[in-house]
Image 1: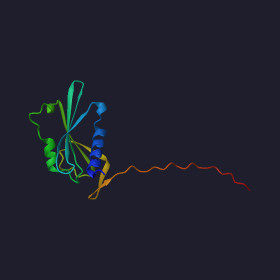
Image 2: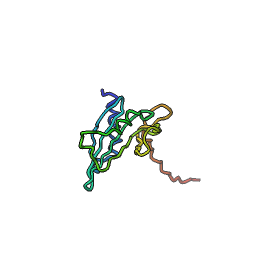
Image 3: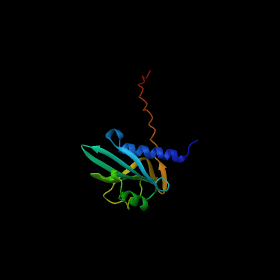
Image 4: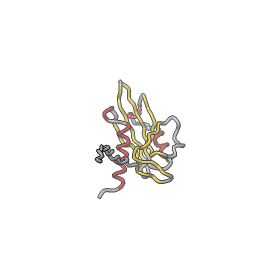
Length: 142
């Protein structure tokens, strides 16, 4: 029997992959884990001779924690992988998360699988679609 953390890591990986596809050249590395599921990832690719780097924060908290914002915003000294021509800062959060602390210049990606309803984190399952019943023609006999 696995732990609940295993499945949450799977959801984090899916959310990142849906926004940063490896087929588009993105290389993903987890850089740092804070408490709970607050994580920072460094995502890089080379396109047209230019290096793009995204420092990405991921959280399942109701409000984006300041320590995660500080970690993502921090300059990484002594690591040449961060010398990028295009450096962006982004966050992946559940829908309805309080993002008021996140700088306005950062891009926000909302999770497809999770949302907050009030203070509860809710898994957004795909709706079950039943096939429509085809109308059956009937012939009336008198």
